[in-house]
Structure formats: C-alpha cells, structure tokens
Length: 373
Image 1 (spheres, rainbow, N blue to C red):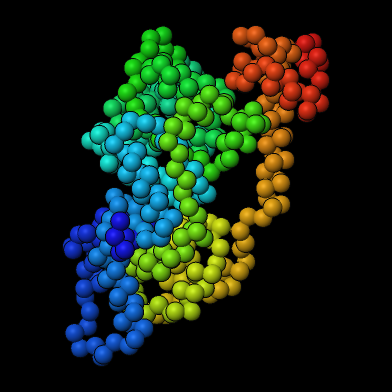
Image 2: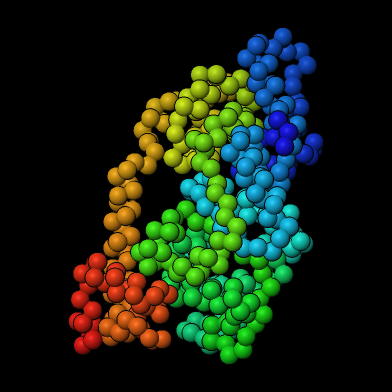
C-alpha cells in the first residue's frame, strides 16, 4: 500500500467528488490574501494529503496498524467466509464490515445492519427471523426479518455478544442448516446470507462464564479481524483531525486557516478511551468554541478522562461471574435441577455436562434446591 494511504472511520468517498460542498468550501480562497505563513503552508499540505490520498472503500488511514486491517479485509472480502470483527467501542467496526461487503461478490445485494444490543431480548428473534400474523400479541401482519431482507447479501450483527442464549441457539441453526423459520411459522426458509459479526466484549471470557455458546463462537470466528484502538494509530491523528475540521467547519459555516501545532501534540499524547468517536466529538466541540480562523483544543477536556484501568477489568470479571451464576441458576430452574441429557441444563446452555458440573461446584450452587422449585 502507498505511503499516502490515509484512514478514517468516516465515509470519505465524498472527497473524490470535486463538486462536494466540502471541496467547494476549500476551493473558495481569497485571491487577494497575503503570503501564507509557515503554519498555514503546513496545514495546506496536510489538507492536500487528505484530499489526494488513496481510498480503501470508506476506510482511510496510513498507520501500520490500520494497514494490517486493510490487508486482512482484502484477503477475506472475495470469499463467503464468516467474519468476526473485535475491538473497542468507537474504532469503526461497522465500516470495516461495509468495506468487506463492498469488495465481495455480494456487493450488488443488500447490506443489513443489526445492533443486537439495541433490541429487547423479547423481540430479537422476530427482528432477525420475522414473524407470522398472530404469532404473538401485536403481530397483526406477517413481517419479514433481517435475514430475509439480506437474502443474497450480507447481514452484520453488531454487539453479537449481547444475544441471549436462546437467540444464539437459533442463530447457530441458521449458520449450520442455512435455513430458519419465522416466529410462529411452520415451514423453513432458505438463507443465502453472509454473516459478519462484531463485538467489543471478550467472547472467550463470556464462553467461560457460560454466557456465549462455544459452538456459535467457532462458527462466526472463521476469519477474525481486530480493530486497533486510536492510541495504537496515533500517526493517523493529524489527518483525522484535519478531516473532521473540514467536515464540521463547513457545517458550522467557519473557515479554519490554521491548526495550532500544540493542539496536534495534545491530541497525539492523549490515550483516547473513546477512540475515533471521541476524537470526532472533541473536534466538533472545539470548532464551536474556537476563533473563526484558528483551531485549538483545550487540554483540560482530555485530562478529565482516562483509559480503562485494571480495576475496570476486575469489575468486568466480577460481572461475568455474576452473569454466569444467573444463567446457570435460570437453566437449572427451568430443568428442575437436571444437568445432563437432551433436556438438561447443560444442553440448554450449550456446554458439556461435565463442564457445567464443574461450574456448579466452583460457584457453590445448590442444584438440588431446584428439583422442588
């Protein structure tokens, strides 16, 4: 890939269009302006580097970390393999999924995105697979699910780690059998859909806690792609900053001639726990408050935030243990304390019965009390 390969997690195809408002705004320069200063020349060079850079679909970037991601996208895009994209919140996982779809043989068909964390657990099955009229209260007519809408194309399941075990089981059947049934339906519907999933959760920890099915994990993790956090691609920050300035300056009706070098250093030295989404918000806020012709960031805004610490990891571990206990007890209550067998708690949780027995002992769960529940 070329040296000028720049990246961002915002759609950049518009930069290729000379008639786009951002490009028109940049082209309206005062013909009678004085000789530009050194700082103005540096900023002009940075704008030109952003404008003339090669594009990787909608993703842009120059750092080694993001170029490694581009390489993996190029390798897997032309296949039909399932892809699991991992990474922190705000790193651009959905844009990577869209880039894979656009470079795939399915690019002429639909790309359907589903945020699994934003849909109530009681409605997720209907959302994914559709429902028949009268399937439940309020189902006044047949509704097509996201899998039907994505037929022949790609379905992107964001935050897949938030799915309930019941929905995970239904999803696993779709991946194995290539068919599904609408909620309340009696006949199977073929599913020719490529699955791309994403999560910011540690699915290995979730599997250990019994919150995510291991067989589903191995189905979706055929080709893993890990998105780097912004703190690992700081070389991209000046270009990302310039792009966001161009974007928001146009929206705010401002013309920014210079970017303070001290500001760039402040941005590069910050850890960015919120990643590119946080960078975008900081720049928009700064433009609202900045002078009309210059841009700067108040470092005090950034010092109030800090990256995740070990205590956060410990809290996550405690939450996973609590969630694990909750899931196991719910399964035991449903099976009246039965662990093994096709109707046992282990089968419902999608783990071996010996594993479940070990977890019950480790968590000191009294399984016998569920026999009389």
